[in-house]
Amino acid sequence: MDNKPVILNHPLIQHKLSFLRDKNTGAKEFREMIAEIAMLMCYEGTRDLGMEEIEVETPIARTHTKVIAGRKLAAVPILRAGLGMVDGILNLIPAAKVGHIGIYRDPETFRPVEYYCKLPADIQERDVILLDPMLATGGSAIDAVNLIKERGVTSIKFMCIIAAPEGLRALITAHPDVRIYCAALDEKLDEHNYIVPGLGDAGDRIFGTK
Ligand code: PRP
Ligand code: URA
Image 1 (cartoon, rainbow, N blue to C red):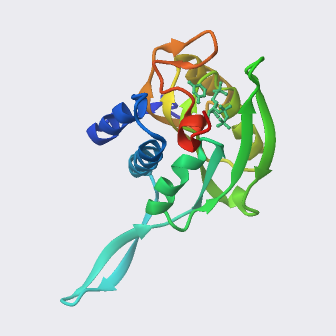
Image 2 (image 1 turned 135 degrees about the vertical axis):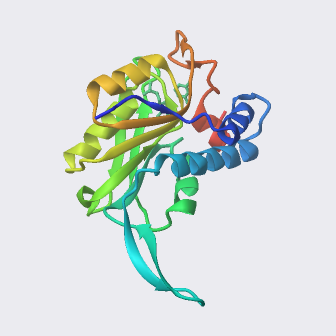
């Protein structure tokens, strides 16, 4: 399978991303923009959904037309910041079930620490879209994918807004079967493993905690 990350450089996504990066953007606008970007990413990232033909009757004639078919979807945000992307996905796929994985980065070691995992009971029958705006070292995403795979899931897409090259490499190495979508591939990580230029701490900016 071609596992090259997909960089979604649609002008609407890039325009909104510029506002996210701006440190003067407040929590309300930041939240709205994260949800809008997630919706646009969902639109782009679901081009490969299976379809089947059905027959309907228009007011004029009977015709063959297409609807989405195949496996159902689950959206799984990595708490906290991934929560900001959920509404954008549900706006387009209201029937998706939502699971939650709680992981934070230890501030000293930068290693991921899991504290919560609640996934739909039938998740192994679903295609999963894993959500987190930031892919930095990759530790959180790798652990989240491990948790989802342990439940028998075989089809996972990871959608992030900004990725660092280090995290991208780590995630591709650990999970070559996971299709990665991002809006931007940034330059590098700094000495605190923050993405440069990035947008700062996504969770704090969404929830106004700093
Ligand atoms: C952030 C972000 C990712 C993680 C990325 O979460 O939302 O989950 O860091 O870093 P990594 O790729 O190096 O693992 P954070 O740990 O700040 O938790 P929060 O969302 O609860 O603030
Ligand atoms: N988590 C964030 O929220 N931002 C970063 O730049 C890195 C990890």
